[in-house]
Amino acid sequence: MAATRRLSHSVAVITINHPPVNALSHSLRRSIAKEFGDASKDSSIEAIVLCGANGNFCAGADIKEFGSSTLDSVSLNNINDAVERCQKPVVAAIEGVALGGGLELALSCHYRVANVQARVGLPEVLIGILPAAGGTQRLPRLIGIPAALDMIVRGRHVPATEALQLGVVDEVVKANTIDAAIQLARKVLGEKYNHH
Ligand SMILES: C/C=C(\C)C(=O)SCCNC(=O)CCNC(=O)[C@H](O)C(C)(C)COP(=O)(O)OP(=O)(O)OC[C@H]1O[C@@H](n2cnc3c(N)ncnc32)[C@H](O)[C@@H]1OP(=O)(O)O
Image 1 (tube, protein in one colour):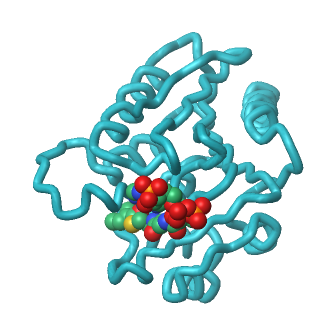
Image 2 (cartoon, protein in one colour):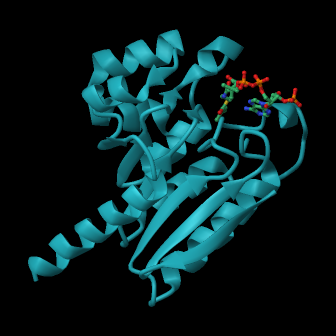
């Protein structure tokens, strides 16, 4: 399990890879933090795209590690704060599911592009907990309190087209989600440079 990084036209594409659903285990979080930190500091990189391998963005915290007492300084909150604060545009490319901590990670990105087949949600309530990595703040800021509360208390999986209507994602594409996210990042960069 690891996050890997490749470069596409000065955009770093960081792929989260922990089969089958890219659950955020301790070691995956460490790997994401390292790749993201390196990309943020690398002056040859102008923007960052976060995506998932195995046909999914991320199903959230690794439920199989719940109850383990491993001490880990790389919390999902730390990662999400670093992503949100990044000076470079960060775009999430969402395929499959972005659930729980996976959606919270995507919400920390500055933009979100989803495949039409994707689903997003905060299903923590279904396992008796509440979102605790910024979802209860970032989601209402993005889509308003009533719609966010509906997602948080019902824990339902929201299809990409509805997520677009609600404003959870910025764009829905039928194919080539990662390319679309790279294009969006480059468009944002173009707008930034045109304003200077
Ligand atoms: C604090 C808490 C935070 C930050 C959280 O994020 S809590 C976790 C929130 N996420 C969830 O509750 C998602 C739970 N998973 C699902 O809803 C579904 O598994 C799925 C929609 C992601 C996939 O569904 P499906 O295609 O039907 O496949 P399975 O359900 O059979 O799952 C396949 C294997 O993946 C394992 N899995 C799924 N989610 C997780 C997870 N969050 N952590 C660890 N492992 C996960 C699942 O156990 C299956 O594994 P195997 O049985 O094949 O070994």
